[in-house]
Image (tube, rainbow, N blue to C red):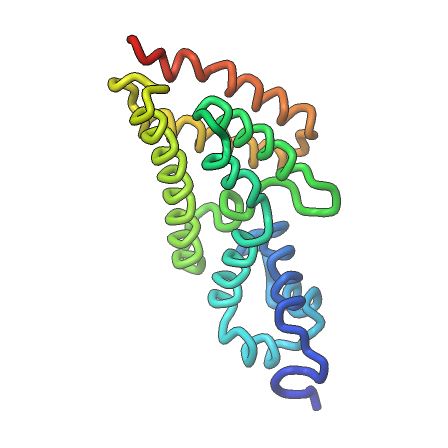
Length: 204
């Protein structure tokens, strides 16, 4: 008879880390319970005892991903002295993060639950909210630059933020399709080159 509950020596954080990698590589729908329990080293009753459901496990995996993966992409927005440098760092660090050896390519937040179906609606809604939050982080950094006089008053910060978020999401898909770091860096450089046309100048 299989053991119920958590196995002896169960490391919840390590199991969650392994589940995160499965969801990252296969997406919510593609990650079967067999995939998850095999990677986590537990059986199905243990998974439900520790995490309640696949949906709850996915939610925790997304939170772990946000805390541990690609954090330098987002901290660079506030740390860079100018918005242009912030965007440069944002795109270049994205290219590096999405092509880290030994990790699934691309971004869990972008690729984790597409397309939406009846079985993954909650997962899709969560990731959609995370992507919207990413656009808001970019917008706030651009509005700060506008307040500091780096961007003209008429610059559409929301549209510029959406442009760079969309570019980053495209880099995730490119990485999943096999693009290497050099290719993503070239895309990043193209995005950086677009800055002057998008931002204009404070005197415009």
